[in-house]
Length: 228
Image (cartoon, rainbow, N blue to C red; front, side, top):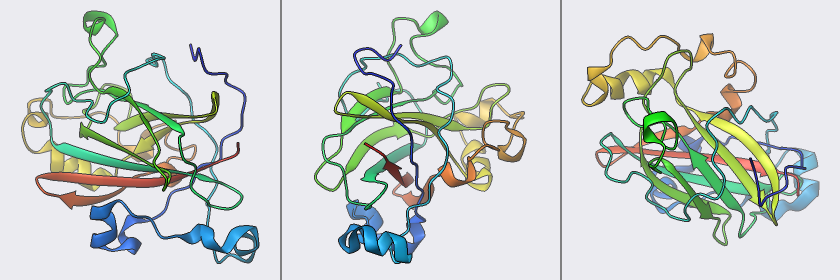
């Protein structure tokens, strides 16, 4: 399903707490320049790249999605800006030009391209990382569907190779607050929280987005360290 990309490489995945960066850094999209120390700084612990195993792609991946920043296609929901950084796991240096591919359900728990949404492409898209290794998306906070906690799927391609397949998660407390309001409140009683999700239990804590209020919505950031 990954054509034209080749699924060959290993994943290295890192999450950095956004709160440590400060509000100005979050709003600007900057991440600290930890890469300056190089491999020696990584070994000494001065630079931190927390590595986690990759997670399942799931059944709803569709290759060759649109290259675009806004993936909502007008669907309702709490605004969510994602700033996803891709770095070299051995040095923490940003990787420019990586293709970051995300997909998730809408506020009603529906995926595009599947079943009745077969001709739709909402909540799917690809962005290239900039010189700082950051890919930015405009989307909405995902809804839930039976059997899974709230999540976003992500795949990272570098020079045509898949170097990371994973899922991004949200703190239950934030999800609870978001789901108290429309359009999410029309679907109460989500059945799985993080601790009960079998996929989350395998590395989900280190695959969780750092979240901060941004306008009427949220900003979610995470740093993904990969082996090229």
